[in-house]
Picture 1 (tube, rainbow, N blue to C red):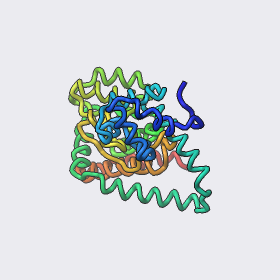
Picture 2 (picture 1 turned 135 degrees about the vertical axis):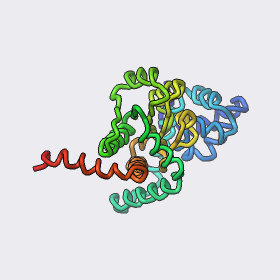
Picture 3 (picture 1 turned 45 degrees about the horizontal axis):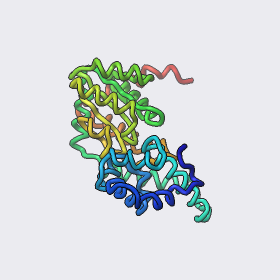
Picture 4 (picture 1 turned 180 degrees about the horizontal axis):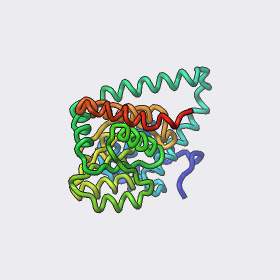
Length: 279
């Protein structure tokens, strides 16, 4: 059975670390030094920062009774959240103001992360693609749907598979004329990563929006568009992360209209096509 928050996960790591192998000890030492930072890391990032390997991180998690890295992070997040609630006074700040401030920070950081050359290249890929397949699960599906909508307004046809198995089968039959646009905040969502790997192996262009530069998804992509504000297991789909991704989608749409100004006429045409849908 996995450890639970009341079983003092951090204390358990501290007590077990001396009996671990050197590779696992490095992971334990890094986690103990800054457990809060671990919540925002992918398995690849933790392995690199701890001067270890992904396999060692997985063994470290199993040593503690977890089936995987995400289960470990969830338990760690729960424990740290419990500690925070018992040791930090309740904030008297305005929740709306806090959301605005975090969103502003996320947008500013995303703006600094975005390489304009990559955005321009991705815009061209989307304009020239024979077929565009978009995929994201859970909160990332919201970004996927928004991208599909923005492309439709520009007259660029795309498709979202609402089922991971269908998306996987499509990727297995993709070709170099296709573009696969995949969204995953963690960059470690199993279905999304598998689709990326299959499409890449078939020669398709793979584009990713993620909040982690060092992740399985990023490693597979032809182009990576980085959004700010990584999520923890307890903050999946958080507002700052979503608004960062939506900024990237809008930036892509802007670059596409810059590359082909006639798309502005298409925007007008698509807008007029639904005017009779409003009272």
